[in-house]
Amino acid sequence: MNTNTNPLKPTELRVFDIPALMRLERRCFEYHWNESQYKLGLERGAFRIYGIKTDGRLVAYLAFSLIAGEMEILNLAVHPDFRRQGLAKILLRKLFSFCAARQTEAGFLDVKRSNAPAIALYQQFGFEQYGVRKRYYPDTKEDALLFRCSFLGHTTPA
Ligand SMILES: CC(C)(COP(=O)(O)OP(=O)(O)OC[C@H]1O[C@@H](n2cnc3c(N)ncnc32)[C@H](O)[C@@H]1OP(=O)(O)O)[C@@H](O)C(=O)NCCC(=O)NCCS
Image 1 (cartoon, rainbow, N blue to C red):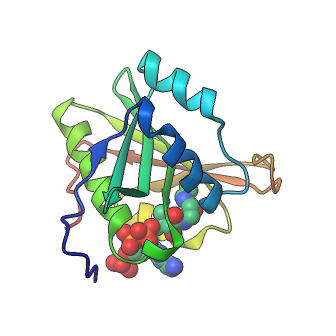
Image 2 (image 1 turned 135 degrees about the vertical axis):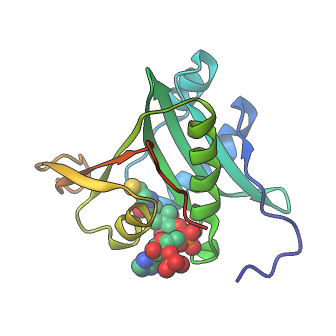
């Protein structure tokens, strides 16, 4: 359980959050986007990012796009010191209620075959594997598992 007394409420990140986002990304991923990719994407509205801050420090984020009724999770990470405290679930619940409010039909994502924690998380939220992209990731050449979730009749886990 999280013992922090601050409520861990997701907020939408803005361009001025990008330096903190880059620090968190570097901590969580070998291969990550650069600052200008994030800046351009946010400025053009190509995607949105939800973040969770505790004592002013960004500790978790989720980046996604929503185009023509289809949502795609682009990135999701929680600082190693804050994992297994339900932060990823908080971010996904926020995303799912955003999608529900916009009559989104389906959600998509890709995940490394070896990433058991993320796969378990996505399955809990109703994502199901529909394909594989061989040697997809530039850093490890690992396969990407492709997951899809239909929002029709979907119930978000508590
Ligand atoms: C995957 C990740 C985002 C999960 O974040 P988290 O805040 O620790 O996850 P939560 O505490 O909300 O856990 C939610 C569910 O995820 C799964 N899960 C999380 N960590 C797990 C682990 N180490 N082993 C197995 N399942 C795990 C469980 O199903 C868990 O539900 P439960 O608590 O009811 O068992 C986090 O481990 C992370 O940042 N990993 C590195 C970056 C990454 O791989 N991102 C995903 C890219 S696709």
